[in-house]
Length: 511
Image (cartoon, rainbow, N blue to C red):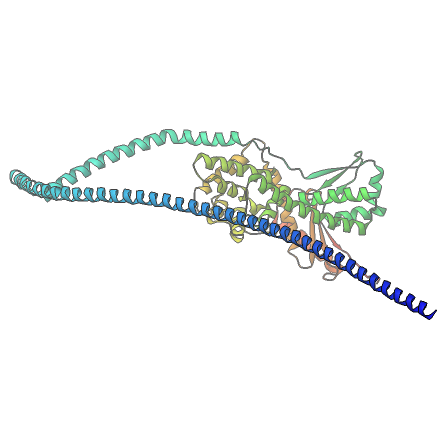
């Protein structure tokens, strides 16, 4: 049994050894196959990589060859341009050299001709000297004496011709000057068709119904008294249907009163405090309207660079009249006439128009002046830096100063043309307004007087005094003094009533 086990163990060992041998052999064969496959695959990969590298190399080579070819082409083009420029420069150089040679030849020719001319000139000088000596010998006069005699004879002949020419010109001027002057004036008038406006001393304020009249008058007349005191305008409320008459010689006051009444009636609140507030507001609006009117006038006439104060004075002309003729219309018409006439005479029309517009600025002063309006206007123009010829034209248009430029007679003539239109002016209106102005100024000359208003066509003068400066007793003596002075110094129709008003006001503020 042991032997059998031993044999079995041996057989098993032999079988196991054989199996191991066969297994080892098979494994080796498989490894060899894998190695061969790996080598084969490596060879394929190697070949592929070599092909890729070769292809990239060829692509790079092709790109480099293209770049080199492009650079060579550019270099060739640059070389061609340089060759062309060189050819052009050579041609120009040859041209310059040819012209230089020609100039040199011309210069040599001119030098030769100059030499010939100098020789001929010397010969001519000799011949001239010989002829001169022969003429002096024949005439018995030297060359200087002959020249003096010739000059004298020419002078006498020129004087005779000049005198004859001057006489002809003078005769022609005498015959045609008057006719030509009339032609220029008529053409100027025909080409300027500005309307003239007649100013009145009253303004009619229209209302919707007569019920409003009672509200305007107020309790015991306090509203109408406050309105008259604030504006200086006489307010006539009568039986005229749907109308109230505003009477004052100053158009600015009438306009302030009209606008204030319009606002009060529209608003509906009419009492003394409200009246004073509205009048102050309207007075400011009128001042702004004056400035706007001045600006609009200068723009319409094409006049620029005026001082703002001159523009304001021009705007004030809208509310002034000269012998019944609206002053702004008169100034505009004179300016246009001056421009037309200056153009006809070949002068500067813009300067003439400027002088024509400003010629009556002395008629609308902010303060009364002893000077005539032409001289006062000249002073204003000088104050606001206007040029000397324009200032002279303003001051000389009524012959108060000597005329120093041609603008002055043009302004004078055009002012006369504008004022001489049929119906343009009324002497009586100017005298009336001057009398009322003198009335107010006379009362304002007394100390303590704050406001003066001439109303009822100059038949009443209202004088408002400061309550802190004059007492009740002094108001009586003041009215008597003013009446006596008016009686002694002024000429007026009928009688003038002087009313001195002293009003005490107590003002406090609730804070």
